[in-house]
Length: 349
Image 1: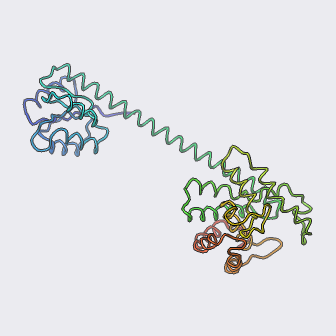
Image 2 (image 1 turned 180 degrees about the horizontal axis):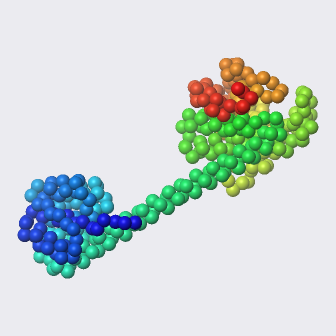
Image 3 (image 1 turned 180 degrees about the vertical axis):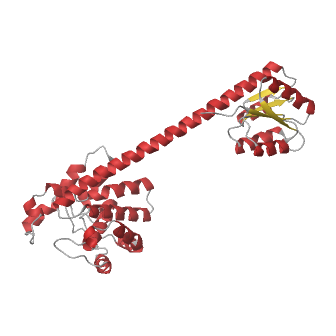
């Protein structure tokens, strides 16, 4: 990367000191400018970019320590050397702790100042290069993370799609259920990363239908009680497929699969859990899955209106569904409707 040559700003209220330092840095080929105090120095820093500030400490008005504090806040890439008659160990430690790269005592030898200048500029160069490298690595990590999330989402959608195709439904049903669950999770104030995991995992709620025989799963007529018992096993099949995974999202999908047919009153399946004993993700998926099923057209039924579906859902408040989630679902219905429209099935139009 092409860089401009280092430019040095010399700040000292004594003209003879400014000129002495000026001759030294000029003799080494550095571009430089001078200022008689902090105010003039700040004005020059605002007008042009400098690599190094060489400043006195004791100056009328704003002193060198105050100037150091201000420039390190405003210009973090600016290297600073304090050149001062104050031979004080505590002052030296203070300025170095504040970010100064060097502390030179007057009267100084030419070589001592030059060595400090070279070291300060080199350190500045290394720190900038290190920060840029860290930023590039961070950008690369973010890119790779985004690619992994995209790949994970695609894998989940493909797996969910396989289950939905066996059930005469569309993959957009699974997408909508995931998005609805994400909306409710965020409305509850859950952590962003957990909301994202819920959104990604919820489409897997019916993946266990892969294990149900076609004669039952695709039966056009009413199921017998025995056949319905077989259908109910899809919750546990899904849990066996997804559980014990190294992926947090797949494990969460397993929990959702196992619990999304539990009912708040304890009359659901497979384990008859009630109330808060049903994992939150199962309670979320239950209401989102039923709403989408009610409002979506299938080969065996027409779609209900949203108003009709909400009548049923509110009637099941505290029975099938967590009452707090019913209220939250209704409060977020505009966002739910936006997702329903965005991911509408082709046959819905």
